Image 1 (tube, one colour):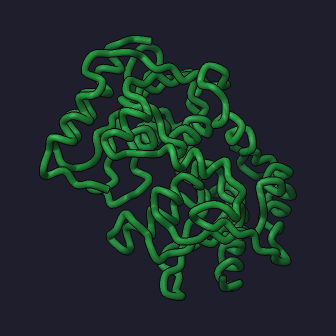
Image 2: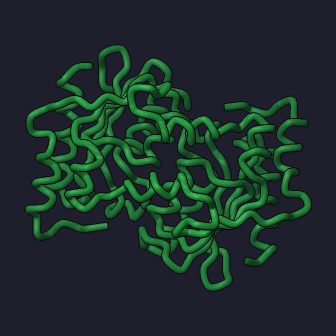
Length: 155
Length: 155
């Protein structure tokens, strides 16, 4: 852990608030002791509900390394990742996460993701947003085709 | 629920496998009985670990409507959403989720996201990827600035 990287993530968040382009969140991704990608929240300016700082930093890092797996990289975030970014961190195979503010600090500022953590634990029919499985012939065909394809690009 | 939309999501997934541009997943977003956005998995071709079908459909729908909240919209996915897409669906304020294959079908094809659901429930220090909170002066400054800014664009 290098404090300067976390300070950079916090400064990105501060600058982002001043810019009026998104929420108070910043993140940097570090490899071999150097920042290889940065991200700030751009939900409002990009009109993209997925444009969280960590998601955007991961996308930028993957582009920079031309690799969709980020082994050997660490992410420093101004705030504890929400469940979306949490999961993206796993899909990206990052080594470690350092964060400064936590989910309670975020909630006090109006960014409450605790409810999504609660929703994830619920049975599908008890969720605020209904998740409904529909039985349909041919539903498994994409997976069958995938497994039958010797040229598939696994990830 | 209209079966034709789920069939479209499945067909997008099938076409995506044939294209060799990404994994066996497709999704469509419907508003007022019409498809307003579609998405397929492009993790490998876009070199983006977040480029899941649902995430890409949500981003496309938000662009199409010029709104980062998708109230009044439903998402039809060829497969049960992973925790990243699950959370994105909440951030996007979608009304409902319909899916065809489920997480078990996906796991059999090599796409196992059950472990992320397990990781989400664990104490931070027991996770495969360590999540470490670092105490730092000024950590809450982005939130303080945000709350003090009368011109902030809430989302």
